[in-house]
Picture (cartoon, rainbow, N blue to C red):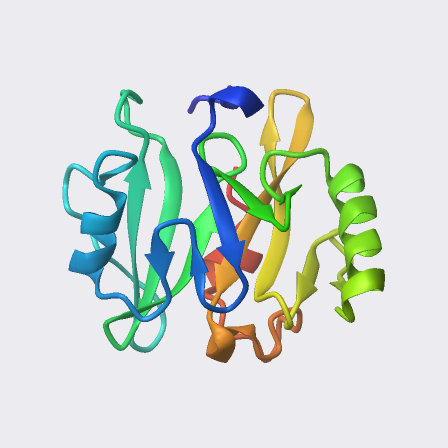
Length: 185
């Protein structure tokens, strides 16, 4: 596995419109529409793997075109055939901006300080868990960490309005267990 992170100035840049879209991905898209929207930026898993999760949730992974082997940059989650969440990898994924605030590939304490300042001025409630993850229903954001060499970097799970409900509560969340239990190392 590659522990190297893409440099901040080399990352694809995406904007977040909370609960509606992240970069070119609009929540509600089909898998085919997601693949078309990512064309030119990210490539689908070369084996066409669709990973089942509990219930009617499946995921597909996308990587940077030049990564060989293909390390995941984005995992798209589909519920009942519609895009409901996108997990952005801390090492390889696009930099996602929320009103100019970068969310991905950051030292967790720095992101937390910036998110706290944002929350204070935008009427957003932040939840924290025992692992240091941060979640907010208002933004449809679950931020966890991944390791890159000796550093932890932030990973973002961004979701639609339905999945945002109880996003910070492990016992009631819609998030697939892979996102909150099976830490993406």
